[in-house]
Amino acid sequence: MSKADKKLLKIIFLGDLVGRPGRLVVRDFLSENIEKYDFVIANVENASHGFGLTEKNYNELIGYGIDCMTSGNHIWDKRDIFSFIDNAEKLIRPINYPKGVKGVGAGIFDCCGYKIGVINVLGKVFINVVDFQWDFIIEEIKRLKQITPIVIVDFHAEATAEKVCFGKYCSELGVSAFVGTHTHVQTSDESIMNNMGYITDVGFCGASDGVIGMEYKTSLTRFVTGIPERYEVADGKNVQVNAVELEIEPLTGYTIAIKRVLYSRNEGINED
Image (cartoon, rainbow, N blue to C red; front, side, top):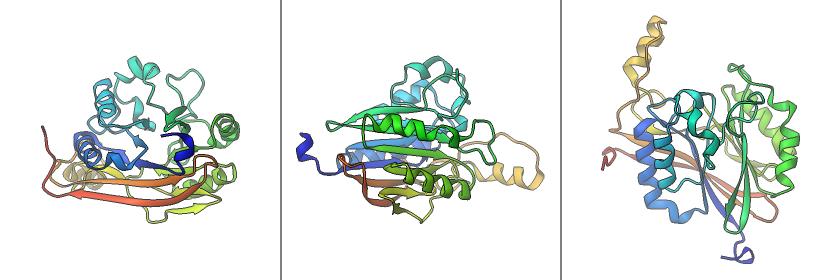
């Protein structure tokens, strides 16, 4: 399809994939729906047993049709990441890690004859392991917009107020879409501000019977006793996909529509 024929790009952003249930329900969802979308983005920092990403799972997710993978503070939880992230062209990590950290924090991706810029940013409030995002985001957005009018930000952060404020700030800088991740609970505040699609948190993909994708009993023990205990991914008997669909004008980079997605399956996932 030529540029002249494509008046809108339809993009889906999948919330944080949590473990095997998250990977497989996304596989099933995309097998049924991928023809609807021109470009697929997913946050994958929890994709490998709930913490981090292995090279095997990275390649698995590419096979499901994911075009761009964003991440967050858990991206380093599997040692495997250090051996492949520099060669993982579809994966970005938060841009505000200090200079010298492996991987890249932004990427340019081809889509239907156009280019899409994606930036991954980690929040500072309650995380506090990275540089302030406010110090450099202007220059990064300017750099990408010299290449394409379409710039999408995944802001991986704890605090709602930080997400809302940073989202408004990015809308003033000409960002096309701003999607919050990390807290795993889908918010109902999707909107368009200054031609930018916005949602505070897109939610997660994985087992819906647990606690944000993790096993309930372990989570309960940690909260009741205050004693750290290893989290386990919840089983996949009931699973969900949280996502947002974005319709973006490729020539202006403006979001024309944003819609929340909630896909659930109660009979479990196909393990084949």
